[in-house]
Amino acid sequence: MTLNLLINRGLSSAITRLALFVGLVLAVSCCSRIYDPNYRHQLYVDQLQKNVGKSFYDLRSLEGFAPAENLLSETELTNGHIIYKYRSWRTCRYMYEVDSKTDTIVSANWEGDKADCAITP
Image (cartoon, rainbow, N blue to C red; front, side, top):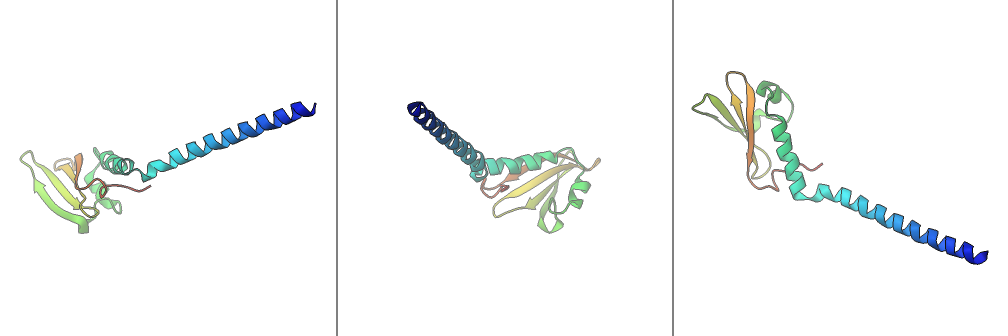
């Protein structure tokens, strides 16, 4: 009877250690994404792309999305659209192409270093 009890405790302890190890590996792998520069850059790109199809006027009224003090240039294209280019962080610049007739953002783009064009969650 004592031998069975020791075997069961040993097995239980091994299973507990394995479960803790698996839990630790999962926790580290989930949290490590926020330190991945490609993941942070993709968040930045996704945020820009979410604005496509929205009103540019509405976007400018939201704090921090298209502040006038960060506007670098406005360029009118031959199709009547306007590209608004903004300063972001360090080398990062982002642009919105806006249909001037409907005030709708038709495309969003960025240029600069990926590490500078990133969002840290």
